[in-house]
Length: 292
Ligand SMILES: *[C@@H]1O[C@H](CO)[C@@H](O)[C@H](O)[C@H]1NC(C)=O
Ligand SMILES: *[C@@H]1O[C@H](CO)[C@@H](O)[C@H](O)[C@H]1NC(C)=O
Ligand SMILES: *[C@@H]1O[C@H](CO)[C@@H](O)[C@H](O)[C@H]1NC(C)=O
Ligand SMILES: *[C@@H]1O[C@H](CO)[C@@H](O)[C@H](O)[C@H]1NC(C)=O
Ligand SMILES: *[C@@H]1O[C@H](CO)[C@@H](O)[C@H](O)[C@H]1NC(C)=O
Ligand SMILES: *[C@@H]1O[C@H](CO)[C@@H](O)[C@H](O)[C@H]1NC(C)=O
Image (cartoon, rainbow, N blue to C red; front, side):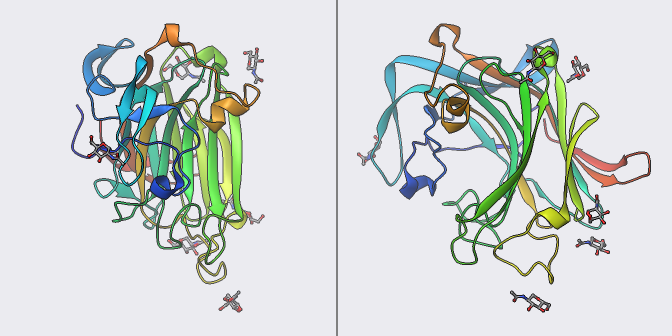
């Protein structure tokens, strides 16, 4: 059951820096609130009560609203759900575990993602936070990104930024997990966010750990606030982009899609957030909240 914790993002997006503050990534889709693009269905992929994000191809184009800039015609529509100001979590004396059970599309140009951004009350900025006016100085955690038909699950911590120019001098710690044999099936992807480290898992297999000593923010003094920016509340995003820099980088710089195979589907069985108690054996859940 989809709860109010996840909210459909109303705007459609194109790659205009004025609107997106650099968040366009040259993606091809227009995000909508249409049920064709995001809905909960009784059964999908062999599971009950599944959120399906669906990227549709529009042969004749779709007028995409782009507040504050020119409207434009897009040939793909899709959806991005965000929990900003509805469900945001961060380190609170114990690490937090964010987990989703998903089936990713195995399609050219598909870019499904389950990720975290710093919570903010600002409506005009997806990535503003305590440490800067825009990406990346308040951090970003990508629990899952996949592209094309690569069969790889990528997880990344983005950090850095300059004190007055949050978008400069950004760095990342990233790893790919080869999930190719598992792509047709349900996989649990998660991140355990602590103030000493952030660890990523597929099912319960550790993919990589990013140590607190590795990250910093240009917006704070590392000596005074060593875990910043990842000791603040983060909200969740689930989206299915089409095209854009990430899939194109794997196909010679050009977006390649297969419109005959549209719609592309990204299925989400559930999303859960746990308060996590580390143990020598790895950890166990203390309290949990279920969002889907
Ligand atoms: C974009 O479309 C909307 C809705 O049709 C309209 O209100 C707005 O004026 C348009 N913006 C531009 C810049 O044309
Ligand atoms: C993490 O939090 C614990 C207390 O909850 C504190 O003792 C420790 O110094 C913190 N570590 C960092 C790097 O902030
Ligand atoms: C992933 O593993 C499969 C075998 O399971 C292999 O064929 C494929 O080349 C690997 N992909 C990468 C990018 O290493
Ligand atoms: C994760 O577990 C599911 C079974 O619950 C399995 O189908 C899938 O292949 C597993 N993923 C990986 C990467 O092993
Ligand atoms: C992080 O790295 C430091 C320095 O190498 C090490 O002492 C510490 O144990 C590491 N912490 C974690 C959680 O891996
Ligand atoms: C960061 O804080 C430490 C401890 O208060 C201080 O010694 C250092 O000068 C500060 N660094 C900067 C760049 O302000």
